[in-house]
Length: 81
Image (cartoon, rainbow, N blue to C red; front, side, top):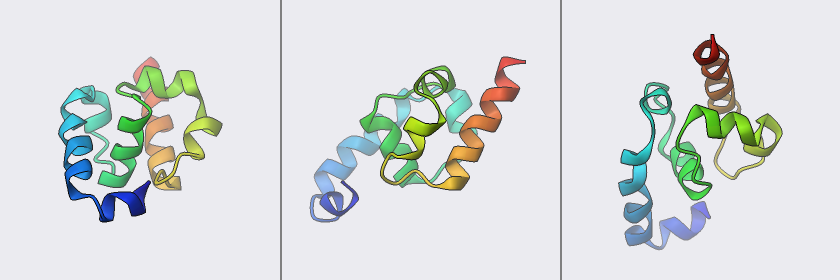
């Protein structure tokens, strides 16, 4: 998907315009744009949705790296407390 966006800047912009749908608890993590685009494609707008899908599912998404995974799941633990 990432390569597809290089050749289609309009599609990239459409996806990035959806960043406003993220809950504040996702935005404060300051994830990379590629990681945010991956979450948009899966409609994972909140920490709760990310945790419902689970670490294994999220970790196989294209453009989600180890740092993003760590941030998403560490915040999730803090958020539940």
